[in-house]
Length: 204
Image 1 (spheres, rainbow, N blue to C red):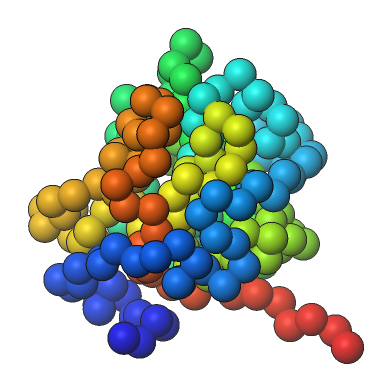
Image 2 (cartoon, rainbow, N blue to C red; image 1 turned 60 degrees about the vertical axis):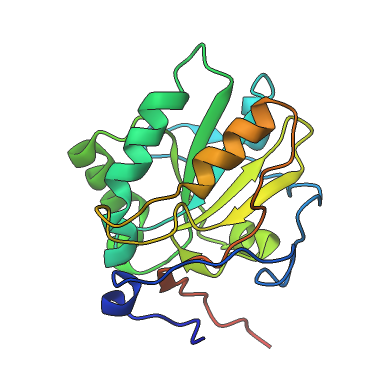
């Protein structure tokens, strides 16, 4: 299966199959300690770290961006999830991170997008792209669920099909509910669908 899916294909009837841990992510396996991040700037003008969520039983980390049409098509689903699960008194936190360095993905444009959509979650920018490399993220959107011990409980796609009207199973919802029960998710890794993260070329 071709991993670099174009937008039309990603919004088609692509069913995400369950896979053993580590099959799709070449950096991390399910059960690994989640890489920490610190002092990433957010659209709210503040710096954010994984440690900010120490009181939460589960943390959902989403790699997304402004420029990918697949990521944009998932914004409402991410907003709905956040409104349902991540209130101040809820045991779940969700944080989104953009690592693309194109003009439309830099912090000022992120701030515009967050205001336009009313994002109810932190939207952070990592110009260094280190957080994406640490997590082995390759696509936008791509989701990671961290359990209360901040180990990877789930990684991959939010659901089984990109068109909202065709999605019948939320891997993200199932994973978070399992973590809150102290259990392993029924599906622990899937192949994320979307646009490739545009990593900067490393200088030799």
